[in-house]
Amino acid sequence: SQQGEEDPQALSIQEGENATMNCSYKTSINNLQWYRQNSGRGLVHLILIRSNEREKHSGRLRVTLDTSKKSSSLLITASRAADTASYFCATDGAGANNLFFGTGTRLTVIP
Amino acid sequence: NAGVTQTPKFQVLKTGQSMTLQCAQDMNHEYMSWYRQDPGMGLRLIHYSVGAGITDQGEVPNGYNVSRSTTEDFPLRLLSAAPSQTSVYFCASSKRTGVGFTEAFFGQGTRLTVV
Image (cartoon, rainbow over all chains, first blue to last red; front, side):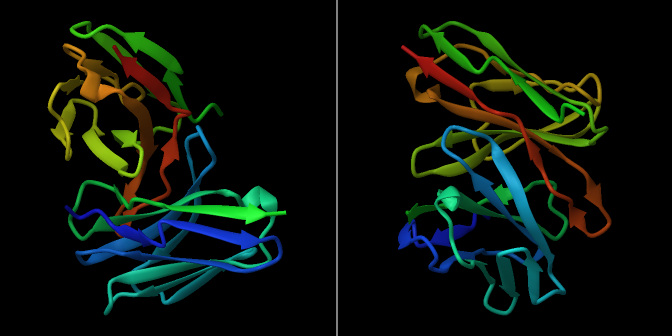
């Protein structure tokens, strides 16, 4: 399977702390994307990083990509209780017709 | 702009029954897909389509059929429901450019229970 894997599976932090979650994948990619899923809802796109980019920022989000290690990290700074959700990475391999999703990290931010 | 509309939101089926999950998008995306989400398993690709008239199997296609007669609609049919198909189903659409996929838009999901 080309499915990515997020690490850790679950993360619990205090409000105001930073949250870091990681994604590893198996094949070469065009892009890597991060999504957020609130409980019982559909996934919402957060950020896309291309294979020739190493870092990208969007508000309190910072994404890094290391194609030599086939890994990416998502950093959420100054977390809020509203950030409580599951976070998924998704990759599309070179020549692939699919987006493959990882297994997700469940983030809990304690007020 | 409605995005991706998925119906129904909830469904209970008896083993052996058939049904169709509806998915429609109004963004003129050529790429549409169906995923199922089980606890601890992430999203697994069932079927996908790269344009009207073109469909293909994903990771877990058994027990499901799809068709794509228009760009907007991509229904998923359960042929003979089994308890193993109890799951949450998501439809998604996106565009594909020369450098890969753009962001995917998801429906709100269908929570299916097969008894």
